[in-house]
Each structure stands twice: as C-alpha cells, then as structure tokens.
Length: 483
Image (cartoon, rainbow, N blue to C red; front, side):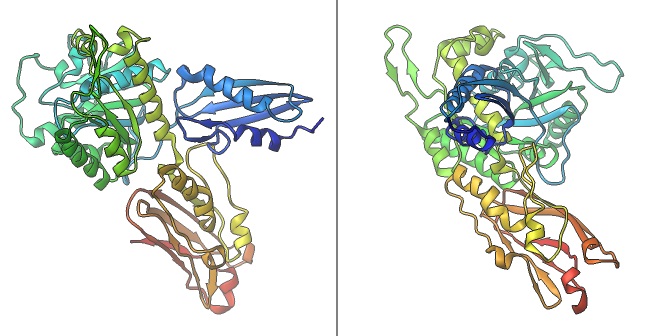
C-alpha cells in the first residue's frame, strides 16, 4: 500500500476545481489542515466567502478527491467559511463594523437594479453572512418598500441612526426619513452629503457585506462613492438589449477609471417563460450581458428570467429569496451572491508584495517568501509573476503580465541595486516604504517595505541605494514607486 503524505493528499485535492473560486482549494489557500492517521485522512476546508448553500457539495467533492488517492481508505472533511475584509481604493480606510462593500450599479434606470440589490443582500444572508443594504438612490428610494419596512429609525445618542432590520438584514435609506410621496428636490452637493451621512452616521453592526443600491447613471453619487466610500467591488446590472448595454458599458468604464474592481455582470430579464404554456422567448434580446462581460474580460455572474412573481414579491415587501427560497430565481440569486463574494476574495484583484528583509542576495529574498491566510500573497519581487500574476493570468485570461528574469531582478550595479517589475496593463503600484541602516554588519542592514498592487496601467518599480562602493554588498535601499 502506498504511503500517504501531505503532499499526496494535496495533489489529490488539486484535482477538484472549486467553481466559484475557479481554482483548486490548495492554490486558493482554503485547506487549513490535513491530518493523517494510518489510511484515514481528515481535511479542514475553510472558504473565504459565505457558502452554506454549497457545503454538502463541497464536502462530497473533497471527500471523493481525497479517497481517490492511493492508500486512502476514508476521508473526513471539516467545512467552514470565514469572511475577511479585503482591499479598497487607495487612500481610503474600511468603515468600522463593515468588512466589505459591494456596489450594485447600472447605466440606465428600469433594468431591475434595486430588485437585484435587495435579493443579492438576502441571498448573502441566506448563505450565512451578516448583511446590510444602503439605499443610495436619494431621489428615488425603493428599498423601504421592497423590504416591507415602515417607520423611522431610532437614534440612541441623538447623533447617529440605528439601522432598520428586516429579514435579518440591516438597512438604511432616505426613504425612512421622509414621507413616501415627498420628492427630494436637492442639488448634487446636498445629495452627496446625505449619502455620506447615511453611510457613516448609521450604527452598522458587524457586517460581513454591505450592498449599496446606487442610482442609475454616472453622476455625483457614483463619483462620491468612488472617492469617499471604501468599495471592495462593483456589480453591473443590465438587460440584454443594445440600448441598455450602451449605458451599462459607460457604468463599467466609470468604475474602471476610478479603480473600483468589477466583480461581474448580471443580466436581468434575460428570458421570458410564459406562465400559461411554458414557451420561452428572449423579449429583450439574447446574451447581451454575457457578450459585454466577455468584451471586458469579466464574468457574467448570472442571468435572471423576466418573471411576474419577482416583480409582485418585491412590490409586496417580501422579495423572492425570502418569499420562496426554493424557487428557480432564488437559487440563481444565491449563486450570483456566492460568485460575487468569491470574486471579492479572489487574489487576482488583490496582490500584495511585502519584503520584510532586503539585501543584494536573491537567495535571501527567496527565503522571505510567505503565503498568509488572507487573499494577498507575500512574495519577493522576482517570484511575483510566477506566484501571483500567473494566477491572475489564468483567471482573467487576457492579462499577460511581464517581469524581468530573476537574474536581473535584483542586481547590484556599481553603487546601486536596481529592481524593475513590469506588471500587466491592469496593475499599478502604490506603496509606502522605509529603510533602516545599521553600521554594524551586513546581516543587520535591512529594508522594510510594503506595496499594494491594484488595477491600473503598466507601471515600473525601481529601487536604488546610495551607498558607497565598499558598502554595496551590504546596502539597503528605499523603494521609490513611480509611474
């Protein structure tokens, strides 16, 4: 009988590709422990997104993969998930008690964005996450009606508001503060100030995810969101017809320019199924959202049917996901929610370089490589393309990062050490670094630096030292990141 090792179990696990992460659980750092007792194996699996709905399928797939390895008689799987806070736009800090913010946007009104937003929030809650929803449409708030909430929020300290709660999700909307028929005749600055107050002056309680239901278009509210709200990613909602897609593309481009990652596209009203005869018809066209997603290199998270009951249930204050959890539309919403949450976790959009110890030796840099439990990766500069951007390349398909070979990555030349990192067209460098020089020995001359890579144009990373020739071998350099 073949000897069972951790490596052989990991090799077997790599045969199972988790459909939401689009990679195997070992590469995604979701295998937290492997215990071997004779011919019996126990595997601890921890996903980075809420996954109550796929627990049994995941356990079965992992069990089958491991038991297929030579020498394994049985496999026990311990399944869990844990949501962590992920990267946001530069110069912004996460909001207290809110781990991840997902914006739901559309270029045009009337495509079902608010209905999609509330059902996605409820779907994430059904998967086990703690969820809130912010109605950012100041002129036309609709979430109070869809959540079946009336009345005004309380204020315990006279300065902040308590969120309204319905179906186990927290919510806030300007609609709670005004009469339903009162028009908001406000100019842009008043609207953006109201949005900031609704977000920051609400006492949110330990949210894994906040869904922001944006108004249609690319105006003041969207700009405020990009500049002042720490967004982990955005979802674009569209219908299949060309007119809606034209505006959806503008919304996509807006988020791209302000460096907010696009998690994917949701195609609403994709097909109509006759309630009388079951005939299927693409009233608004076929596959428009999917084509748009392919054009921009993102995923089409799902396609929702045009169903009378979805509209009726939202209007009645009991959206589809809670009105009929087993309905086909409810299952589609939950799958979209899982895919979006997995995209937030995905390391393809969060690449982290952290080199805790620097010297001229490539071998010492290589020894500093670590992989943390979070979505980021701790890597040396010359390993970046192989370890991180390689995964990004496989995931996004069109992105082809380039990096200098190891022999040239860290090369002392006369009195300077130069590092050049060429990233993909969607990677930029933002960093802060500090250096500490010590006059004792080579081993005590260190550079501590950190850098975060986010989506943008091609950048060049350079580092240089100003040490004298006799100190060149032991020099440390302060990284200077520039476009």
